[in-house]
Image (cartoon, rainbow, N blue to C red; front, top):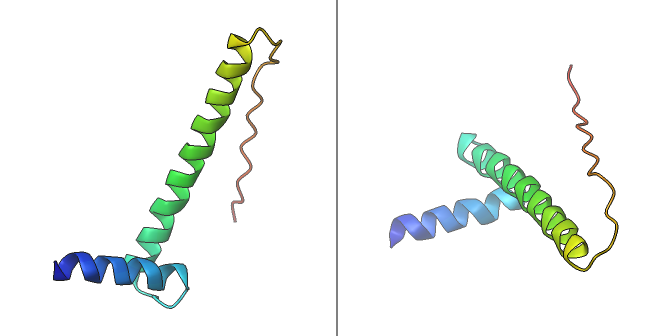
Length: 69
C-alpha cells in the first residue's frame, strides 16, 4: 500500500512540476504518449461512426510536427 501511495504522490507532484528526478520525467513522457494514442483512437472512432451513418468522410490527414534541434 505504501508503494501505491508513493507512486500516486509522485504522479501528483510531477503534474505540478515539483518532482524533478527521472521518475517525474518518465511519468510525464508516458502520459503524453497515452494522450496522443487516446486522441488518435477518438478520431478513428468518430470517423467510423460518420461512415456508419452514411456520411462522406474524407481521407484522414496525419501531419507529424516534431521539433528537432
